[in-house]
Structure formats: C-alpha cells, structure tokens
Amino acid sequence: MKIHSIPPDFAAWRRQARTLLRDGVPPGEVGWSSDPGQGELFGRDSGATIPSSQPVPASSLAVPKAFLDLAECVACHRDQSRWGLLYSLLWRLTRGGEKPLLRLTTDDEVIRANRFAKEVGRDLHKMRAFVRFREVSGESANGREQFVAWFEPVHHIVRRNAPFFRKRFTNMNWSILTPDECAHWDGERLRFTPGLSRSSAPEDDALEELWLTYYRNIFNPARLKLKAMQAEMPVKYWKNLPEAPVIRELTTRASHRREIMIANPGLSPRPAPPNPYLRNLHARNEVSPLPALDPAELESASLADLREQAACCRACPLWDRATQTVFGEGSPDASLMIIGEQPGDREDLEGRPFVGPAGQLLDRALAEAGIDRDAVYLTNAVKHFKWKAPSPTASGHPARGPRRLHDKANRHEQETCRPWLVAEIAKVRPRVIVTLGATAASSVIRASFSVTAERGEVAGAIRIPFDGRVFATVHPSYLLRMRDQKQKTRAFDDFVADLKAAQMATVS
Image (tube, rainbow, N blue to C red; front, side, top):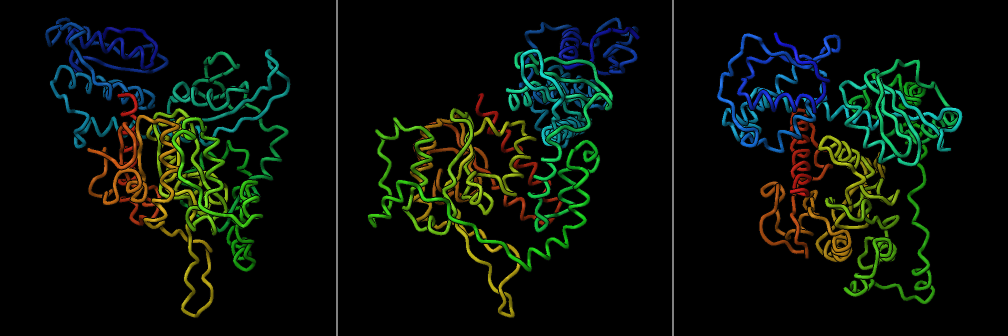
C-alpha cells in the first residue's frame, strides 16, 4: 500500500481525487483513511502500477456542480467511509457515463450520500440553535468584550458553520470551542485551532441568572409537547445549555401550570398604539381606505416608508380585529423572496412574519436547505391576521384552548392587500420568488393555481409584474397538520428540496 500523507479535509481529497481520476484509477484500487494516527487520507495499492483505464486530460472530466455541493457537505460527516463513497460517485459520474446519477433516488450510493448530507445539515442546524456564548472577564486587544461557547458537534462542521456565526455576531469577539477544532473571530479574521476539552470553556457569566429568569417567563406550558421538544432539542444537548437546570423543572410543572392558565385566562391581544396619521384622521372622522400606491411615490419610497404606510392601511375590514399590520422583513436586496399566506396568532402579537410554529418549521427547513434566513426577504400575501373564535362545546360552554383560530382571507381581502406585496417585490427586486400555500400562489401566479397539481417552478406568465423565476410549494402549516409521521417526514424532505431548487435558481 503506497501511502500519500495529506491533511484529511475536502480540499485535499478533491486534489487527490482529481489526480486519480485523470490517471484512470478505479475506486476498487484506492484505499481511503482519515485516521489522525496515520496522518494520511488515502492509500493506493502498490500492485496497481498500471491504471485500469486510459489516462484522460483533466479538462475533459466535467463534474456537475450539484455533486461538488453534495460532496463538500458529505466530507463533513464523521463516517470513515465517506471518502471512498465520494470517489466512487465521482468515478461513476465522469468515467462511468452515469450523468443523471444524482437523480437516481433508488441508487444505494446516492441514498447513502444524501443521508450523510442530511445528517450533517441537521448537525449544522443544531449547532446554530444550541451554541450559547458566555462572557469572559477582561477585554480583548481591540477593546471589545470577549465571549466563549462550548459545543460538541456530531460531525466535522466547525469550519462549515463558522461563517454563519461570523455574520451573526460580527460586532463581538468570540471563540467556539469543540473537541475537534475551535473557531475564533476577532472582528477582522476568522481562524481555527486544534480542539480542546470541556474544562477550557467557562461555566457561567454575569448574565446567566438574567437569561434563566427570561427563559422561565417565556416558557409556555400550554404549548409544551415533550416529544416534539426533544426531537428538536435532544437531551444530549441539554448538558451544555445554560437553561438546562430549569428545563426539567418547567416541563415537570407544565401540567399544573396549564390548568391554572385554563382556569384564569389572560387578557386578549391589545390593539397596537394608533399611528399619528390615523389619530389625526380619527379626530376628523375621516378614516378611509388608503389610495392605490402611486408609481412615482413608490420609486422614491424605501421599505421602511412602505412599512409605515402599511401600518395605516384600512382598505379592508381585517385591520379592525388584528393587533397590527405584519409587514415583510429581511434583506432589502435579497435574491430570494419567500411569500406566505397571512400572519398567524404569534405573528399578529409580535408584528413579524414567520415567528410562530409554522415559522419555526420554516427555519428548520431553511437550515437543512443551507439557506440563511437573514439573507432572505420574508413576507405574506395578506398583512393582517384574520381569525375566528372557536365554536362552543356541545354543552354550550365556551371551548377551551386558543381563543383565536386562523380563518382564510377571502378573494376580496387578498386583492385589496396585493398592492403592498407588489410594492415589496418592486423594492427588493429578488431573482426568485417562492410562494407558500394556495393564498400566496393565487396572489402571485393566478387565481386558479393548484399547488398540489402544479408544484415546482412555474412556467408561463404570472399576474404580478416580476421578470424573475417563481417556485410554488406548500405552506409549513400544511406539514404541521399531518398526523402520519412517515408521511410527514417525506413531505418535509420534499419541502426542503423545493427550497434548495429555488436557492440554486438564484445563482443560475
């Protein structure tokens, strides 16, 4: 066995795989290893002195971008067989003539590679969700406060995830310590050092008690679903979370607290403070629908201006029962815009789109699709929450549970709200739009559009002024309503695939 000593990472594998591929060395003649004790990535059988295939120029070996994206993700997996799996797929794609290989969902190697990629994606999402920074004493060389976090990833994801934390926490110095590798950001440079033990990380800081107080107060026992909670936040992560000491306490007491909440219902949502513009109109008894947006005014208006104007909208009756207008948010120059149907109960109370259960599922899907929520513009086709009270029980008593149930906006309400959506699209100018659910599709594409029958990229003209590409898929709330777990898992995977296709369209 001839040993080639190189660092065990994706870039090194790619260089060596290119050489082997050019020389015509088939997968069966290559042995791969990422054992740190050996210090090498692969070995080649010394008996294979003559390539089994004829050498070819490297320029003639076209590798699909989809494979490179998949391979870079699979390379982060901890399974030792990942390098051999990737080289086998690469050989089949380039030297085996199997061009549509990655679309063969029944192929064993494709299935395995996709499973590896999915597991890495899940680990990336968990790291983003469960890293908790703690402040350490003293200031850094550039005068900024220093924060340290400890995390134990399942796979080799530190380098792949570090740019996310650099973007999210640009204004502070931080270090993320793991057993495999550590990442450090000093405001100018991102660097990596060897892994450390748990004892190197701080135990707590001055804000810990404040955080626990906040966590206790936002914990809602009426919405506790322990199995769902543990699926999203597995117990193995609890030991490194500062809120871990109170999780068991709160979940144990949830049933008792829920009964108290039912017996003593809280206040109904309160209307938002009136806008000064509306206050003047009320004083003169001149509240009326706002006129259509003038194209000249739109050209000079910013998204902030539109948001302020939308807060005054009284063009349809929905404003009367909603707490506030829920306008879009996100990157003002996003290449991808995601349009939902209408705000839900949580969105109505917080004034932000996609912050309730459906929004949390969307966040999870975005993470698995490799899409940064902060880089996307999120909005709804309808800007006010339309709701109805639950029906009374058979005995005539008021129904228990949530007092405000989602009610679909009718055609008139959708049509009345569309100018705000068109204005958002005109200001953001995305390259790709994704519609979630029937209401968004009928507002953007056409009234008769069927998400079930026409899901995917939309061909042909749409009803709003937009010259980019449009994709239609289901709304996350549709997935939440599914009871069968296997069906729900398949549907979620399809939803993630739709988001990935839309994301890829932004760069093609």
